[in-house]
Image (cartoon, rainbow, N blue to C red; front, side, top):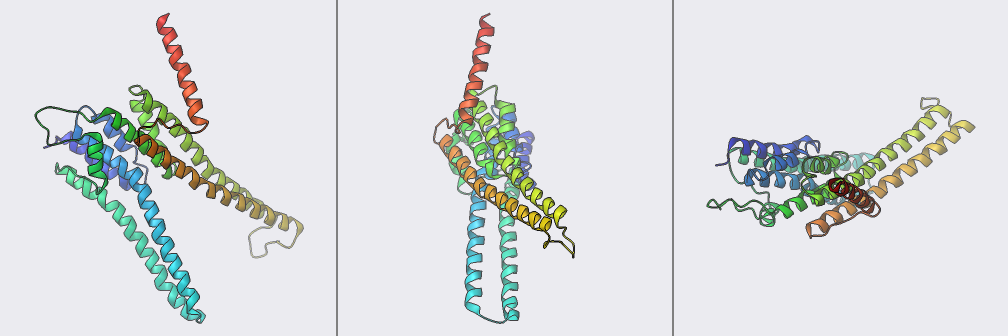
Length: 310
């Protein structure tokens, strides 16, 4: 039976999924605190981290596929209907309700598993997420039934899992940066590999988040330009020269913001590829970022060696 401390860390790690991404750093803290103390708590924390990063990525993709499929079916039905406006509204209302229900069901399913995991861990059970749990146990060398001799989790695989989840968490807007940041602060001095990967991942995610902020800033710039030149009241002066200029500026800014947002998914895909490469055993480096971080870290290492020699 796991101790109270072990169960508390396991429960907190799983329940952090309910914080809409803001609690994604808690499993990293739980793993860092319990590694080489409790394989049970370490494994549950790493499993919870995987669910909130890799699992969240898969959940988002499946949700998008379902929503796109429903939207396509709706368009087909509307195109084939060729009915009056009232009949079209009658067709759209149940379709909208279906979209809302499907979204709520998907969200509920995502939050249901962590709650079940937390309850199981509170009772001292060795919970495993479907598909991922057993695979992660084999990857980490986790054997809870082995009681005669204490064998810790495979250290290299622990570090690679945490690093890979840091790469995967780029899809969690803003809060995903907490994974590499927390890993760097808590375990960077122990593992040079984890430190390097965490730093470059953090820089990469800061860049991706900045693109979101840039798109919002550009859009707001166009909106305020339209507000100043034409106004947005009942008597908006779009037919004046200043109003037309404001309208043009608004549409240009909106187009630029949309283009930026269309580029962001490419960086999400790059983050997923980086995480996959790390799990396969590579020391993946982002273009430009990786080289810069490696060079900076090498300078610090060389300086430390020289100071020690003196």
